[in-house]
Image 1 (cartoon, rainbow, N blue to C red):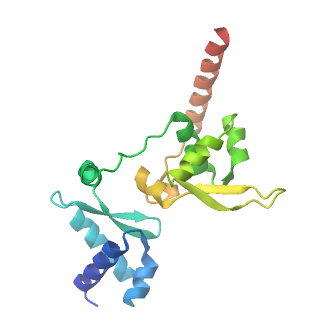
Image 2: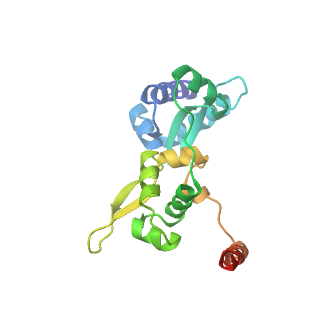
Image 3: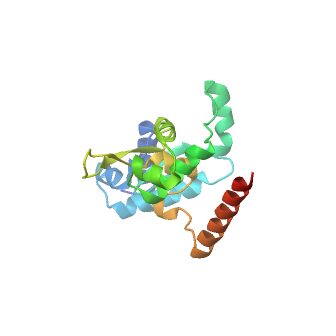
Length: 189
């Protein structure tokens, strides 16, 4: 199969499916080597980076999805009369950060880290499709384990969890000092 034919087929598949499709699934459907699919995806990615193109190709771990460029989102909202994107409160964002960095993680583990109940935040994150149930912990009561979703990767513009920024030991110490200072100010009031 020629590269142009592979690119055309991939565009058709991604357009018709609408969601992400695993690269290996595309290779199987086209009955070609995965490396040829990768080459075609690279070529399509370059094509969609042009300023006059309203689409982009988004990689999500071992999958790929055809998407609208973020800068065109407001026009879609106007056409579809859909509410603008959700916003995350500090509480929900803290909870999401814990899930992203500690996954798989239980609600109880999140609450131990945060020091407060996180039921509302977890429910919001599930509603926004940023986290999902990824299994059950082999412990009494078999608590639910949570992890992030492909939608999380898409919303935060990363291709995999390994792309999340890592905190250095110096930053950890700096954050500890800031937290201690904040606590002492609150206690003085």
